[in-house]
Length: 471
Image (cartoon, rainbow, N blue to C red; front, side):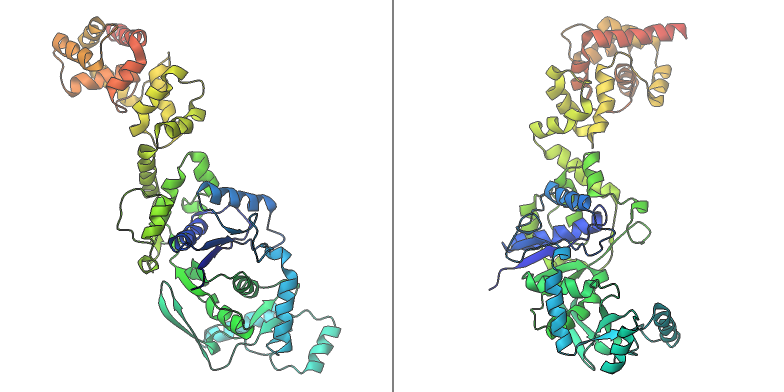
């Protein structure tokens, strides 16, 4: 049985976003499940928009997510080069083969003519396809037009009266009448090759056995199958996954909240959180726990890929981030927090602080609030904290100052304040939290109380005694 090989073939015209990354992830999971190969190819035929920094960025993004490739860009392999911009000679070879077989022809139709033809077809309720106007030009007439300097494209002659069929890994049996497709362009008038052609040729020559891609490519597949059959090249198994949409059902975009992988990384998301969320966008997993890539790949099954659009929900991404924050080991937690808290947390207290706030943060910058609440000399009060303090009796704070001593833990401290002031429950704990941290919510008070320390706690409580007396 041949080795299963999947691929990810991005165009480096921008930073990769959720839809791109999910495609890469599903291909990695499929390859890992069968101990196959995942290949990275760069489709940089758009010379004006393709940039080297985007190629570097997408590789960095994939590696950060752990989506490593075994063949392709920067890795090498038997089908090198892996950039389409460097494979022109191969495309010319297969184009010449099609020309020799009479399966391509020059088309001199202008953009205006093609637009008029599409409108006429649409008005008649017919699918828009090339009318075939130039398909029967005699060789002498085509040569004359070329000699006159008329621009032309090269079109592939679709087989006539045939049904192009394939078994889609996600959507099952598919059938496309060739008459509904029409002859299509494989080389543009500027000499560049069209996606249909180079993408299909590369998949075949690189030994790609399975192509898992977005459903927006579904109608491309019969064209590519026809091309590969005409060139007598192997046809991969295709699968078309659902697209990701926003809360309103529109295609996901930056405007609707989609973030690039680089932005996710800079915000402090963990790769395992992103992978777990993406893996469940359009694929059902029975397992509800956080899983690494190996576990995700073992549970991956193309029969569990959904056909309905997958709805993006940032809160679900944050749910998996919360799971990741709780699961990482202490060393990872400290390394993750350290850059955001530089100079804010004493080194000797860093581990204890990280333990204390772990359950209350999603990102490193969230910990800054608690670093200020614990270690700042000038305590800032939230509006809720201010209201809680205003509602509390000054007797409570006098009792708190009197109750405080050097060796006391928070439970013993709160018990003594309760006995001295008569306050209990929310009326006790909310004002104490507000006075000591400036907030009415947050990490467990016993841990924060120890970190705040006797002198700082005494100063804060005394301030509220003075404040209440002035009022």
